Image (cartoon, rainbow, N blue to C red):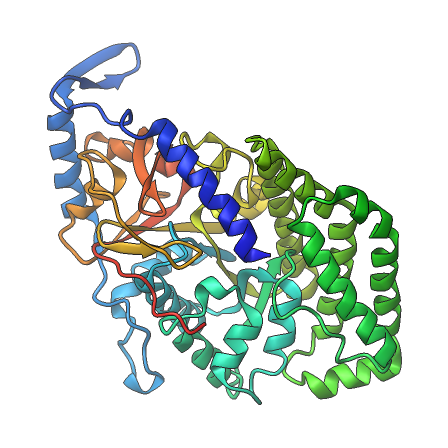
Length: 466
């Protein structure tokens, strides 16, 4: 399902670039900006002068990370010294969102792994929630001590992150299970994901087989175009999941769950939620997805955008449920694409997904206690979800990445949330261009979308372990 959806996404990427490419940037010598106080223009400066001042301010105020390499627990005290500046920014935050402008960057995987280690060890963030299936992550985490870190990675998260650079995170998760402060792995996506549910925990071979068949059919229908056939089989598929939920609640199934997946004591409620997600998907999402595929054949992308918005609402519901019902006293780290976590995604001009997504739909109270960190690349190469390699577009003066590059560091962090609008940083309070996937120019107000940005100067594609 991920492969077919990705192909559809790339069609939209290509369409977006063809529509807006070549018309985005204005020569910096022919326009000007003004410093304004209420009722009075105080000074006019050319765009070139403004960019120079922004870059000078950034060089002075940005934080420079010493490394993005995951740490060895044996390295001792001081291994996160360069990240200490995050402590006052996050001291009252319950959820830290770690974004990425592309799923296909090795340095993003490394940097996020090191950030997770820091947040877990030094700030008590004990739950890691991935943009991956709730059911897959929950089941794989339940076996994480008994099996290899690579197996847990491949059974839990989407294949776009099955990389050499992500593997240290799963080694860390496994090692942490033997400590007094384990790092819990979970997911919040509702998409069907391989390996599909197989019902190994059911004391009913026939029902287990029915579940496997339902999973395969639901997956096939969701990327197909045969709406009539799906509607004929829809009620039957829903009934299978209802039967599985009922069987999962029996004492024998509960005992088998505990035996097969001993490292996840919350698995019964997580699995029930995942199965109810399947019913929700079968009732609504599959038809939306089929109509989306039918529309794309005719060049109509509105159905695809509707499916994206539906998915993000479901992901948000899962994340809120995890934070309020399953782990109500824990602090969360969320791993996802920038698009999903931005605070006003629908306001981003030029985005392939001009709809409300998870971060924008987050309740205001949760936004107050969250910190959204976007990751970007300044140069190099990235991989798309199909593994194809693309060059990061050359930076134009005045883009977010170009301004941050003035910090002169391989790894530049800037806080946006706790900045007041002043001459040197006014760029973060006005529309600026940045590059999604390293190749899609988007116009956004950085401070409206993120609380902080981490820029990697030069990036490379991941080393996949598929």
